Image 1: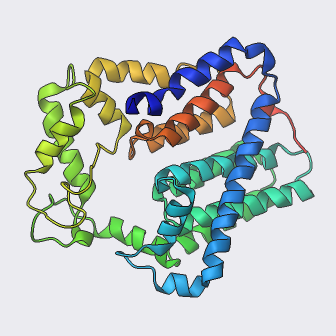
Image 2 (image 1 turned 30 degrees about the vertical axis):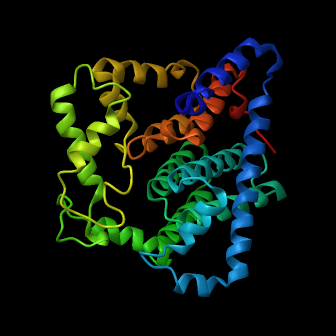
Length: 332
């Protein structure tokens, strides 16, 4: 029942939309994305209202490794795992940016509102330090810039904005701590001599994944056995603390490795076919969507949470049945 509850969207969205395809017009996707963007902006706005009501400087001063209060505000209020929330916010921001570049009038009140929306969402991503999502925004926004913008001053202004984002990343305490974690991470398996902030949990996870795959890379171990195999491997680590591998269920933290572990190398190949099935109908925004999803899968099991399943199946199906390349048109 848990499996069905989480994965039923893989069946419901495609079947419902394909059966009722005649009711989906060229503006259906646009309206859906617009509602999605507004929802994300309202969510981010509400969370910041809560944070500001507590006192921004007070909250920042109390933010530590063991009490990441900014991250807690975003995760507790949204009830969304932060890498996923970063993925949602970044897709919304890039969709807004695509609208700006497609707009016939670059300086218009709608574009001003779009810029404010992007600023709010990306500042939120910086504050709760969704590192991969932020990297994706910088890379894909630069792609959009050089793909669609021809005015030199727009390019210069945009690059200055990117530099401002990087400055904030290294100055906002909640973000800086997460960057420091990367620099200080060591390729050392978890052991009893380490404190929590010294443990490289992902290295321990990927070490166990590689051990299991060495013996099962062809046919995998089956969907019901992956976590059992991982937990059995984790038990060999001497690190013990409130966040050790026996207290928290650590999955493979990589969707591709998870599929490989479950179904073997042939299952992984079919998974790539499934992801890239609509590549012939790809446009810029669909390409950005797939890039976000496929990159996020490198560090998270996106389809292990319902929010990831619904986000992918809803928009992937809408992009596939979209009748016209609506996003190549100019939008005021």
